[in-house]
Image (cartoon, rainbow, N blue to C red):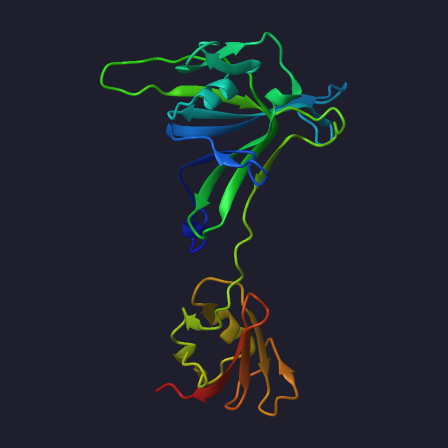
Amino acid sequence: MSITKETVKNLLCDAGVVYLNYGLEGERVLGATEGGNTFTIEREIREIPVDGARGKVKGLRRIVSENAKLTVNLKEMSAENIRLALAGAAVSDYPSTGEKTHDEIRSTGEIGDTDYANNVALVARLSGTNRPVVCVIENALADGNFEIGSRDKEEAVVPVEFSAHFDPEDMSTVPWAVRYPVMDLSDVTTIYSHKPAVVLVIDNTPGSESVTVAVGTTCAGLLAAIRSTDGSAQTYVIKSESGAEEKSGTDALVTGDTLIITAENETDFAVYAITVQDVE
């Protein structure tokens, strides 16, 4: 089965929020959207032809071009958003004299440096954490067509396609990134057993942790029978009754041995007293 305990922690949820200048001065939410938003990376990967090759050959591929874009289905209108959607446009007062009644957006016929946003980012929530997944394009310019469609009993949605652009002063750095959150490392030291014939009883009570195993259980047998209660990657060490010797593999467990469990965060730990018991 492909579903694990980690599956529910790694699902990208909902439509996300689109930000302009994310993480920089002037950051703002672009506006409400409808129908979701799409982050796309288009890549041309060339297959280098050589005589004698009967198919694709490892090492004979190279990236020829990379282009990233963010398509936003923008529902919230404003003069500034319309200007952003029209590369090379400017906003002015209308009328130009007298009392202003409207913001007027017109094309200037040219695209200048100020038409590029520092970045546009799609920020979506990951199911296992409050930390966001961020899909960001840099030097973003809306270079697609602009279209407003209106229909009875519906609200207009304007698709805006922002494209990433390389910085001419740093052509080696691609102008896009996906920032995936580092999950908080677990502090869980509790365990459970999936082999009841090997591990008879587990007590996860803090301060009195213990595990009871069947006679003849080896170190390897115990470790194969236990799992962390939250699916995290714990570290296990078994020590002899005296505590001076580390036991492993086919070493037989005896009453008085201890199981030291270190949590995934490598800080929290618990010591389980091992008891060996006959099974009647």
